Image 1 (cartoon, helix red, strand yellow):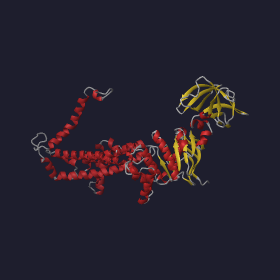
Image 2 (cartoon, chains in turn blue, brown; image 1 turned 45 degrees about the vertical axis):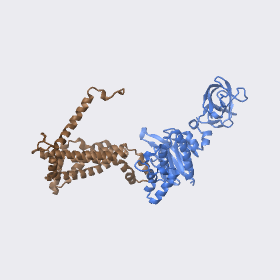
Image 3 (cartoon, chains in turn cyan, purple; image 1 turned 90 degrees about the vertical axis):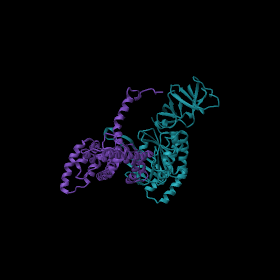
Image 4 (cartoon, one colour; image 1 turned 90 degrees about the horizontal axis):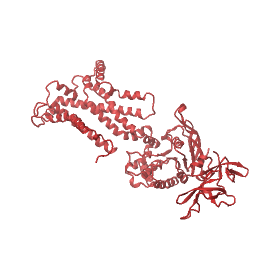
Length: 351
Length: 267
């Protein structure tokens, strides 16, 4: 029993429907979320991330397996008896109550004295910078303000864990960036464990202490953003997070042999080599140790340029290079070039 | 400039038919109201403008008596029907789907489908034997009968409102430590209030208006306003009936307006 674990999922299975039509939304998921960390469940829609969140909140009960909060088994507890609060995707603010009444709702339900409720509510409204709007109806607020009310409402009863179900997806890009910073600040100020669900990999990388990547009801990898990005365990994780190249290789004594015959050094194990475009260097064709390639296309991105190439065996490879001001890096489609991989960047993964 | 595409207004004769329908709907009501102010004794020959028949009706003890009885029955029956309909609506929308749900739905709406005269006869028979067995001849029978046939009228708007309400509100309440009762009291009920008000209003009007079942179920001396007026028609018909009808119409319009004003802000 570890003291620093906030949420534990033990071999959790969740099926919807019966018999042959049953769908396994979660397939034997085990995870331990640490106290005080910003943990993100990342995956495409339908991967089971929201189902796992709903199981932690108590809106669903697992088909088998257990959910623990700290050391307590809460598998069969209803949501109103779990010290966990949720920020819903649609915010789910109560339309018949004011901002203040929304934020004070949980404390009122817990039967706290009025003085304590008003003090805590004021504190929460200050935390999300909404003091002036306390007596407005929630329908009068903008999307970003509603988001803040939802956060204040969920944080007011000081939950052990705050669950956030894609809370930023309804906001426009600029507001989303602001709220990302805001959420991170709130998490650090309150010290509460955040479990954040998103399908946006950039959001996950910038905000999280650790990320759990999910697909097909299974947890594929749990690690820090850096590790997820630089050392994905399989093709799904590598492909879902950022852009990457996949090259089929055969393992030989010296390293991994590409289809075109060159041998490169690579860490990890498996039959596929993955290398991020920014770790691919385009060099002169005659440079020693370079892999031969031909430029197919150049795509301009403003800050940098994507160089689409083909290797000797026809395998596609993309390099991303910073662009000199006004220049095109001296490349043109059809050029014969050489390619090298940054040291330690090429990794072998399973299919 | 006309908008392109299909508009019913372009159908030949559409406007004429629409006007005709409205005339057929409202001309009788307008005539009724106009003749309620007739100074003469005929309901068809106009003499002069007067409030004569309103004061006759106002001074008529039988009318007063029937009005009070109608209101007592309508208020009691709509209250009882609305409470029961609210629970029925919750039971058919706020739980996992179950076998026989459609059957229950049909059962609740039974009074809408069974001919009223059949229910009236059935109630006459069963209440007659209860009256003999208990010796009770009060208003209870009428209130019970009205409550029963008002349930579906109260049920339909309440259910419609519940189905339109996102259950995420109730999920959020449970997440914020509300027990099942607190969730109902502080979230479901306030959000449902416009539906409940609409249901109660409809039930009230339906009860106030009923003739067939009331006629069969009432004991001696238990005339409601509609059965009293029906009784009057068998004798000499005077514009007093017009005056009472117009007053009922005014009450209904006032209720609907109040309801509209009350609910408009919330939605």
